[in-house]
Structures are given as structure tokens and as C-alpha cells.
Image 1 (cartoon, chains in turn blue, brown):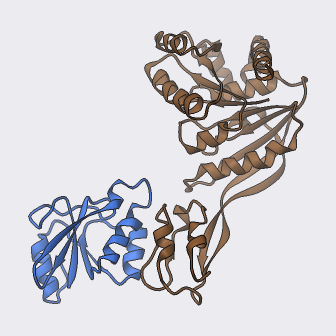
Image 2 (cartoon, chains in turn cyan, green; image 1 turned 120 degrees about the vertical axis):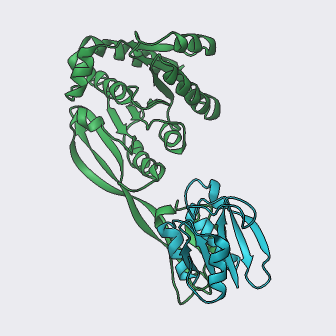
Image 3 (cartoon, chains in turn red, brown; image 1 turned 180 degrees about the vertical axis):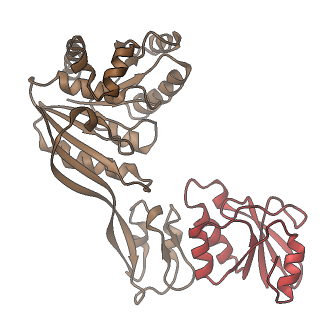
Length: 108
Length: 286
């Protein structure tokens, strides 16, 4: 399963962001292999429509779930329609949240 | 002659100047004032026009026919404003982000998109004394002033003879909406104030209006006896004629606050604005 963490850095040690649409980058985490791929968020510097742009990257990347902070209404609509589950981390450790997802539990 | 009144900084006195120009020109041929400050149109507060005609301002936003759409996502890719998201199946359209450029409709291989007008603002036209009045007003919650301004000017600019004076009250700033409001003008009056803020934003305005759009620029300094001499030195260096200085005067502020136009409260300004206009007309004709 592919899970996205919205992140300030490049690996799971970096603090996750409190917002979705304007996060600096997405960490695509392969929950089976543990591989982490960082993808820059074009929405971070968008004039308008940041949320839609960000959500499109997550959907196109094939993520099944997002671990993030606040999600705007447009981004939420895109993620919901694409069947991507959205979980607010609320300060929880992303590794713990990913483990919960792996075991079919709902984080955080 | 079309005179646009603009400024980089807001609150410098654009509407005061625009309304004064229109009032001073009455009786010397047709006069028109088009309030293009679509996010804060307030010339009507001074002119109190009778409204005779109204129109909606629209953008054309795409609508998806789910029976024709095969979910290819080319529309979302083409959209530079991220107003369309491709999620497999028919795309999601966000009209609030759409600029109405039509790219999505153009690229759709299935002809599954068509455009429908979405109302984003209101246009009004009427008369105030001898002045023909027009106004662009962006709806609350909308972000696109430019098409509303364009639709006002396309609607009202054609309607009057070439010898008419048209005064366009432009929105503040240096972005698309301001450029749309001034780009048809024969000359642009930039209103500023002699402060570091006024100077900073005047320099930006000159870069856009004179340097990028190539339009003749003249300066009006408002609250002219305040601040410092930075604006004067800049105008001298850049060879920008200062055509009028309006001093800071509590009585002027009080009149404006009551909705009384400058030239009505202080008739001596009527001559000054008429002289200014005659000078502009001579330059434009030359």
C-alpha cells in the first residue's frame, strides 16, 4: 500500500506539516518495502488552487491514504472522489500511524 | 480622449481625481465616467447616478457531460489554474478557480465539455447630471476582477462619439485588473502621495503603465504638503510632469467623507481640473 505523509523534510524523521495544500513535499511511503520517495508539492508556491494541485499529485501518485494536517474543502473533495483516505495526524508520529494503517487500524 | 486614473497605492485619491475630472468637463461635450475599481467601486457615492441599465459579468466555466467523458484527464492537465481535477471518471470542476480561458474545452478529445456562463459580477450604467456613468462590481467571494472590468469597458466604451471625454477610475495596484482598466487609455494619470509608500508604489506603477504598456503617464500629487520630497525628485529624474498638487486640507477630507465631490465643495478646483484636461487634450491631439 502507498501512503503519503505531508512533510517539512525528506524522510519520516522530519516533522509532518499542519496543512495539506501548501506542504513543501509529499513522502510517498511503500508500507510493504518501507521505501520513502519525496515528491515536491507544486501547490506549495501556487497563487491559487494549491489544494487542488496538491491533491492531484497525491491521486496521480497512487496513494491510498494521506497522513496530514488540515485539508481544505477543494482538496478534500478531490481526495474523497478519488477514494484516498485522509487522516489528520494531530501531532502523532507518522511511523506509528503507518504501522496502524498496515494493521488495518485507523490512525492516529 | 480616454483618461485613466490609477495608482499603485490604494487610498491615494483616484476616485477624488476621477470624479473631479468628469465634473469639471461637463458642458464641454459628452463626458463619461467608468468606475473600474471593481472590488471597491465608490464613484457612485459622489455622483449618485440614476441607474438605467444593468448586466451580469460572467466567466465561461466548463461543464462535463458524464456520458461523453472517458476520464482521460487532458482537461485537468491543460488547466493552468487548477480548476479541474482528474480523479478517474468525469473530472471535478471548481468554478471559483476558473479563469474562463476555454483550454479544457479546446483539448477535450471527446467533446465532453461545454461552457456555461457563471456570474461573477454586476455592471451598471446610467446618468449623473451631464455625466454618463458606468460601474463594474465584483461579487463578494469572487477573485477575478479583470473580466468584470473588461466587460464593463467593452459594453460602455463603444457607445459614445470619439470627441467624448472618458474617465476610467482604475483599481489600485499593478496587476491584471489595473492593466485591463488602463490599457485602452490615451493617457494615464497616476495619483500618488509624497510619502515613501506613495513613492514606492508610484515607481511600480510607472514600470507597468509607462514601461510595460507604453502609455503616456502624468502625475497628480495628493496631500501634497505632507511627507518628503522623494516623489518630486523621482518625477524630475524620470521626466514625469506633475500636473496637479492637492494639499492636505481637513476641509477637503470632511467634504469627501460626506460624499461631496472635491470640485463641488471647492469650486476653485474646477478650473484647475479643466486646465489639466485641456493640457492633456492638446498633448493627445499633438
